[in-house]
Length: 324
Ligand code: PBG
Image 1 (tube, protein in one colour):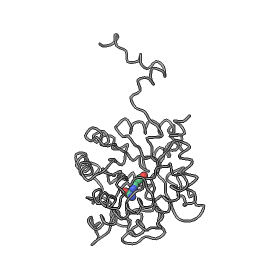
Image 2 (tube, rainbow, N blue to C red):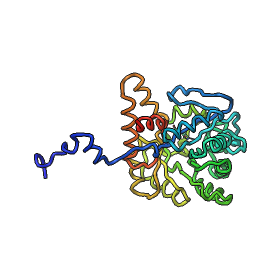
Image 3 (cartoon, protein in one colour):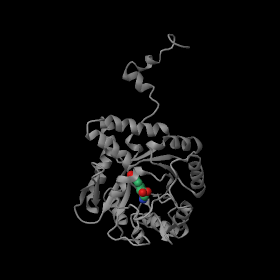
């Protein structure tokens, strides 16, 4: 059946028809909101390259948590800025570390809010790499033990889920074992299975103070040119016990999200990263784009590609828009 018998515009004449046949939905329940936490009191420090996003001290978290819940954003992911860094990232698994304190505070004041934690060493090591340096290179196997300790310390503090973002080989199984041996078999792992060495992380590295002091992350994060390798990375993480597979960044990698969605039956998450957020904010500030519409279209496209879950700095803004 071709024109004039078939007219696709018939199904677009009004919002009732359009919404009836809409294939993709976006709800605050799909979103995870990242929080940056530092020590101090009454700290709410704006991050220049991420308008509307702040570094918060622990005493600000109850208020923040309640705001998220009131908007229907039921899940946050935590990033920490420790007071001190050292070569082995001890701050990452300190019992009284910044993240451990933040988890306890949120779980105390707003227990319904789901708390995931980023498990990585880059914020905690003096050189800003995601693992421990041996002879100038990030050493895979000695890093695994520290990552497992870190994930375990988060679970002990009350984290609902852990999300390793370091890209060391074998970390999912190491973390799974550490959790299981300590009776945390119900704490899931959302693995940053497919994480590219991306320039879109620029603003985040300012926010979390974790830019590498020398070199870059290309010896452990993936080459943006590769997609078949993404399937291999994801397969490994599935075999090692991941509960959710994440692709990061999101918008520049929609094809990768779509492939993972087709190939695997685990839930898929996508991280709409700092640079992808900053681009929209900057253009909107200049009046070049309609921020709300571009935000919605962007998040919808990530869902359409196949992501169940989106980690995004727009989570609260999007929820406000969707709740209108
Ligand atoms: C590493 C980590 C990074 C991001 C999340 N976890 C930075 C990196 O790998 O350099 C980036 C997130 C963003 O850009 O929003 N712990």
